[in-house]
Image 1: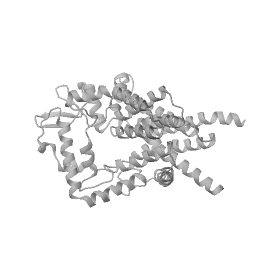
Image 2 (image 1 turned 120 degrees about the horizontal axis):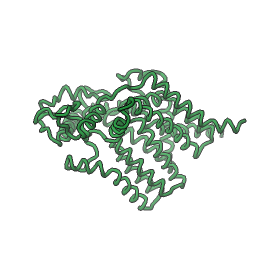
Image 3 (image 1 turned 180 degrees about the vertical axis):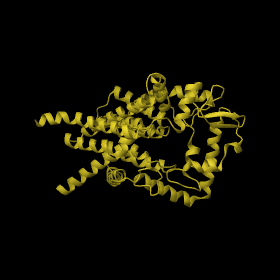
Image 4 (image 1 turned 90 degrees about the vertical axis):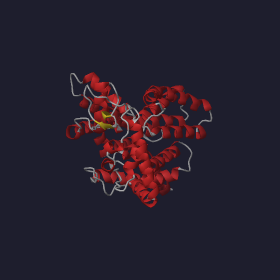
Length: 413
């Protein structure tokens, strides 16, 4: 009977995970595209151009839904993967069903698979019981359930990053193979196409694995070749359109959104719209319009930071604190719900302590510690949205597990 219960434990976990997300779909699901996704997917469908801005006159372009007579400027503001996923689903199923529901069901399935992969990561080095309990914690944290039924790339990002950690842990356990290297490179390329800044963490991972795991240069070379080949179509598209080898161009906007006189931890796009009306900027409405606009925002943000160094440092610390613990002035609905805040704070305390301790030990958990703290340090330069905490939650649980194990060993001794 005990053996049967063990066999059924994982299917029950996955069933409950799926049911929780289907229940969230019934009550909280998005029913339409909004913001940049709305413009990108509509304009790609209508004009065949992945773009946000429509030419209004020779010196003005605005985010709009294109009509047949409009000119759409190609965009490099956001990474393309999620837009393409939405577009393919819309193109495939919109004639006979609601494509928004299909997108959300895909995210629910991926979120459920993510829990299974997360269980497998822990199971590599922990007991079955410990692994199941940890997977339940990750599965039923409210933000993890809620995010799967929202039009956002975060569920796909968490799926890819957890799968990537699964492969990396296999590397550290000496279970490497050429197939695993291909998967690692594929996942890295998809993450870069989903979140442009991941390219920094990809290079960091390669360097770390080379230094502490394998001194073989062919490991890095093969991964770079595979990843570059997967990225090359989009990079070529950008070179043709913008005469530059770039992946995304939103650094200036994101920096100004999080660093301005009307500071908010979650960013303040209203300040940009209010202070810098596009009608007054007079940039020629051609393919370089978005790039010139972002360069303008970058100059303004750097000017503000230079003139307000103390405010920048204080605001940086506020964002750092908010990422780890709590934003004391959030405008997001249900942010302060105890079911969201309490797990976040408990995990943050345990993972910080675990991360600090595990810095000293070479291997998978030292890598996670570096990854954890470098993410917080990097994103705090810009702004912090509530969903960002979900990116680090798998790492926080893994680091917290190690911290709890250290405490248990200490007290047992």
